[in-house]
Amino acid sequence: MIVVMKPKATKEEIDKVKSVIKELGYSPHPIEGILRTVIGVVGDERGKPHDLDSLKQLQGVEKVVPVLQPYKLTSREVNDETSVFNVDGVAVGDSKIPIIAGPCSVESEEQIMTIAASIKDSGASMLRGGAFKPRTSPYAFQGLGKEGLELLVKAKEMTGLPIVTEIMSPDDLELVEEYADVLQIGARNSQNYSLLRHVGKSKKAVLLKRGMSTTISEFLMCAEYILSEGNSNVILCERGIRTFETATRNTFDLNAIPVLKEKTHLPVFADPSHGTGYWQYVIPVTLASIAAGADGVIVEVHNNPEIAVSDGAQSLKPKTFKNLMEKAAPVAEAIGRTV
Ligand code: PEP
Ligand code: MN
Image (cartoon, rainbow, N blue to C red; front, side, top):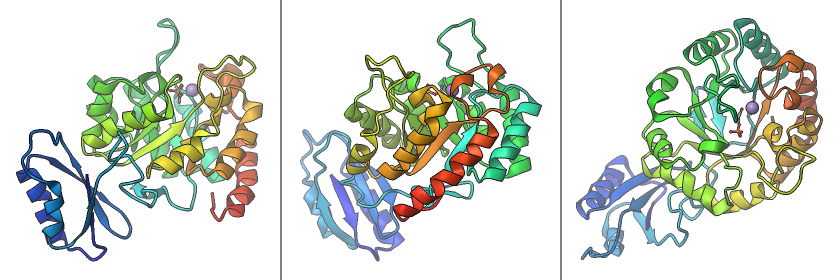
């Protein structure tokens, strides 16, 4: 069930509804929209004597409606508008499309500072960079860990760009939270429900990648794990799925963008770097994603992709990234947005 508050409902009225929901044995999950607050009511209704319809009697309540989808708080039924939230000064979900850029892995101070300065100059909104890397081989570079996080902060101090970085284990949450503005959950951990619950308790925004064999409805249930713990600042990110095709690293599922936009109020981002695996396809797939309604893009950029420790083949050089920004602007404009 969701309780839709009237646009002018006061904080006291909202607090009263939350406390009655708790008294009835459920947990309230408020989502603050631009126009109004809606409160998700989560809990097992079986065996409970009370009818939640009675919540309609409370001051400030407009209506009480059932959510039909298995994902409740994530569903667009809860919120007609795309959720907008602030990541250290950058609005996510709004008409300006944030472009997140940076290397796959943080490798050295010189590398991250050079890349951060160049993407800032080209108009990127946030800096990405992995300090804890999920690698297919245990013998491959695993990331600089804490040192990588410290380098990201140095780059933020220079550019002002908020940091997006991956968290792989609940054990690292306290550490990564201290440095990151957005906690990235990678494709390989997309259905790691324990990790999802942990980041659901965090105050930091989460960028949740789609798993490589995760259906759209499974993906939405992954997000539901995070929202059900109280964190509704979640970005969904399409990053390509496994298919029979071998010409590209993954098959970027462009369909997922309008489908997700229809099913959820959460902002939907595109990752054309992992979605294609080759730098030369990154610009066209970025433009297609924006045209399809993506609320943001995350791309890999490296100053020296030939010798990158990870994902060099799909990384744009700074000059090509500048070109991406220039080409993205008129596409965004055509659909009434900006980059
Ligand atoms: C990454 O962003 O570098 C990464 C490992 O992505 P994914 O989890 O989508 O493979
Ligand atoms: Mn990568």
